[in-house]
Length: 165
Image 1 (cartoon, helix red, strand yellow):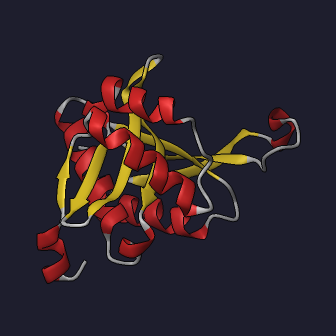
Image 2 (cartoon, helix red, strand yellow; image 1 turned 120 degrees about the horizontal axis):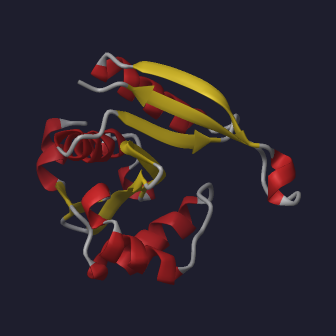
């Protein structure tokens, strides 16, 4: 991210006041699966510790939502990464992801998981770069076949990164 632009961004845990803007960024992305506005409020309330927002002087620049898997407490599951169109290509997603991973690792996480469709080159590049930058292994395998989505979605592959030290 350009040094001047980086100074304009503040990365924090989301608050309830961020929920509507997170929904707007997801809606306007044209690529993210859109959850209800209510779901983004719940993310802000219940998963703020494993999520992050980037704020600029103009408003919300982006967000990452995640949670610790209940059945695998050392695994951070990243649900969504969204960046406002005015801030794309500036390293916002990478900065947000690094902040969420740093926080999770400091609390005992050793692994990160996310699901990505085979056609989502931006997310594949983002998570591949995260693994490289952290010196961690990246494994990719099938998780949710398109048959599970009742014809409304293409298959999601599981990307697993770690272990983090």
